Image (tube, rainbow, N blue to C red; front, top):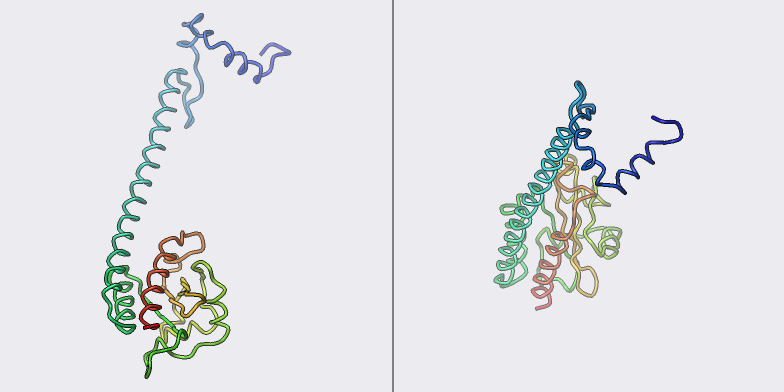
Length: 222
């Protein structure tokens, strides 16, 4: 390259004078540049075609991802809709608890589901596992949550809620059930470390918690 002219100046000149290659059409045909994947040199026009093909492949991949995410979101929305309808039809708190456990296990395929409730006032004679005493730390933790919380380990005493399976669990989603304050904690868990992970979106988990909280809050209050 002529002394005093640098690559940036050449690039700037070509950008400012796009008619350059129209003035020198043979130059375009005779320019050869390295193949993007190594090996032989190729005409600049062939390199442009390869670049366009790579961009098209990238766009196709992104489009396929968007379609897959859309299908997944549609599927989750449909499952959440079925759960919502079942909770609306539940006549009391035990029925709402059963519906929640059933749909999360069967429809959402969550391998481990635990639920703990402590207020409003518990139903007379309540003796099911959902009303088992939990630590004050777990209650304070639930009341501090404004969004679902994802963890790779069990928080406070919640690992014991899953019995013998607790030691083999490696991902947890903690979903607070709230009215004026937290009155319960819905916990989902899995042996798969990637089932619930910190980078995942929690929008549907939040909606799940809101739906379950509305149904149980209504049933417990009534």
